[in-house]
Length: 256
Length: 201
Image (cartoon, rainbow over all chains, first blue to last red; front, side, top):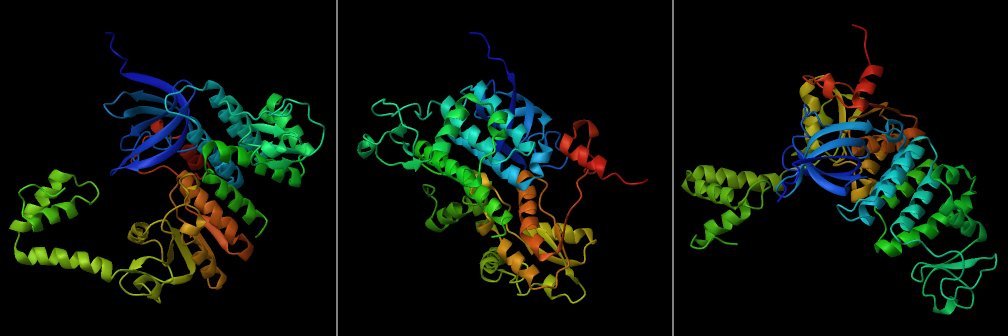
């Protein structure tokens, strides 16, 4: 039997940190090659640790990881991008944390999802560039699509009929838009406006940058956020924790 | 699980010790038998200390540091500058800042930092209490001394935004190189901030 290599390399974004014992941490990293994985960073909470700072949550790092008996161990870490401007902006940090939590909650360990990784890195870069909540909306929709939860929005998900250009029911449980006739059997959902439907369709073919460049009026932005939040809640069976923080921060902004 | 064969009081003590962080069943056993063999006075002192820590230690109503008297000795000290408030995450951080001897203001202990992903929001911290303290008017400067981590920074920015309308000065600790560190292994964030904060030699 060929020996398994003792170490492997990965490049990923640190999603979260849990402290372990006196000076160690367990970090969850989402990488392109390995997917999501956990490993121990020994002594990383000591002031003189060489890896400290390279393994903070919301840092993109190149790491070298050794296979351990139960958990793998980081042996080297080097920052690729610390997203400094992102960290120094409260609104952008909140959006970014929400994206990290989505990735953490929607993915399984050791399941490589290179497209989702590219999407995340791209979203973080755009958030750092001050692109705001539209980036998160695009990220949510593309994440759902990549993981097979894309809502059906080209016609009625129940009967397949073409949909007239009007307010339509978006039903998470039915899996997409539902025409008037099928509405009674569709289960729950929310009526969404024409601009929201157009944005849902546009997000499928637009890059995050293109999507973020669209000027969306605040009320449409709010409606889109709620509609997508319901899709996310349906598939996760809960709301991500960070959503409350995003809302709390933007409430502060308005001086509430 | 009570140890087979150990008399009930010892088994109970082992059980209690094993609830402490970092104490496994073997260590708990060793500690319990040590207490058994130790002089009775030592055992009583330990018991008393354990009881006191829960009965006598309270949170200061002003700064939320742990204390045996409310207000705490620091808040009660007339010599200290009441216009300066240093905001820290944990009671232990107060001791560390005090040890530097370079700060003569008051403190405010948040009891944690914002961790949106784990669901720790502003309402779980003593943030509203800080807001009320500043609203009361005597404070001229709030120094954010939260950890230079993602959570700590988010907490500082959040507090800054919350206090902004009150017109109080909000500052934070400088970021730089720790003593004894290697530049070679320094992360970009720390190094770039250290470069910006460079000082005349």
